[in-house]
Figure 1 (cartoon, rainbow, N blue to C red):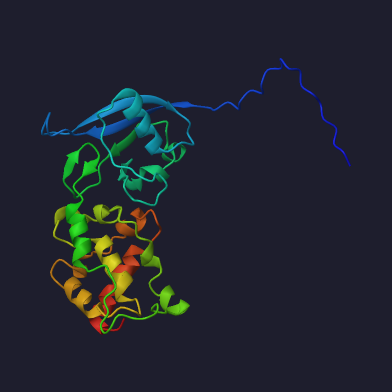
Figure 2: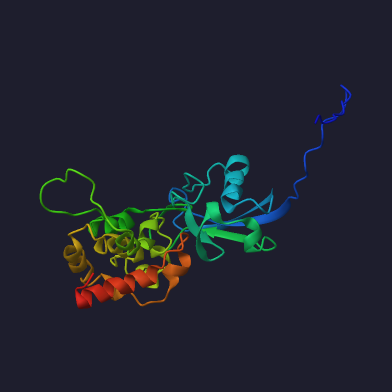
Length: 256
């Protein structure tokens, strides 16, 4: 069956694009430039944004249209790389996953660097201590014997045992939300323990005892005070506090 069509006049105007309701917001950024001042300062930026856009979009608008000196990290912009972790309205979040409409745009939106790590400039912190703790727990598969001739197989049940902690994207949101880490930069921190957990409970791995001994040290899992800040801050929904408690239990029982 044919479908009737209506020819449009050649000079007909194109259909109007749907309007976007933009709102005026204030983004209050904690700025720091060691070449200018030893102190940080809050700077307000008034911009217009679609409330369905993200805080990262607002930062891009500020940098590209108002002040090109604003410095922050970002990469994939889709919540996978973990580069743009920052404190937004007092909570650790990923700027690329935080919608403006979800954080009360009627009030100034505060943006500042994550805590517990040295600020290098504006929203950029020195991540080296964080990554050193990650390296210290040996986040890789440890096995003995000859190199296998086929893949190391694992049952679905064994894989499920550590599935949650494989989701970590190393954004440091959990570690930099931890009061113990704020006060003692030597503490391994939640992210390092989560990544140790991922291999300690992997049935294919043979380095569990080594990792447990590392985390049994003075700055290991026993520094955790179970405040649940880390679990609340994780943008991937990892049960961080639960993972830390499971590592503590493995240290006591030596069963993993």
